[in-house]
Image 1 (tube, rainbow, N blue to C red):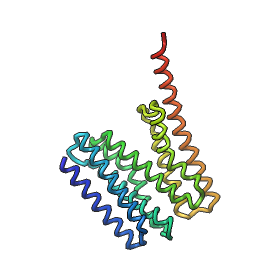
Image 2: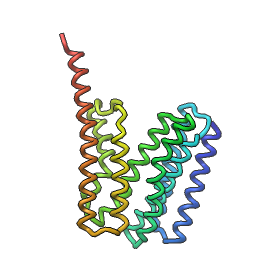
Image 3: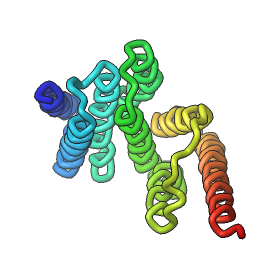
Image 4: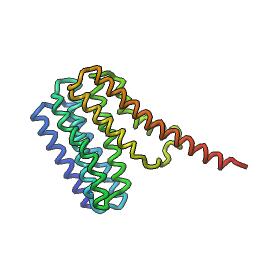
Length: 238
């Protein structure tokens, strides 16, 4: 148990060092510092508690990869929040997010190769993906409009809906398409953030991946509705 906590503290320290290094390249606003540090500390604390409760004795190689992604996302959060009040180099955000997206294809592979797959690790990976999309869509909102925030907020809207309609919290069958859509959204949002493409192309790309995300979530919602209806029919059948 102590190993998990020590590794967690280590990641917070490394993350704070990374924030300092980025601030030396491009000064961060006070809000940026707070947002980055809070993201780093909260995400690490939540994962540490979850691993401890699950009985894990070590952090594990796959979680180490995901923690690296989470650290990069925390620093990207600081840069994004700073961009709301002052200029930041788009290349800096790209340099932080590109490896975070690339590592998304690594943690699952490492988990399978090392036999360290776990429910906590899978949830950690999923939440890191969701938060990265939120950060990127917040950055891109100033470029192509607030509608792009729908990409980053959709996961959280789905979770919120689950508190109102409990059947939406039921386990979903694995679909690789979800990972494909999440990766496509991340790459598309990063392309928009880079400023390399003309505005009409940015809008087109954003609209396409938003449509893919709506389809993916819509398919899950329809499946959950059908399963819930089947269960209710069994319960109330004479």
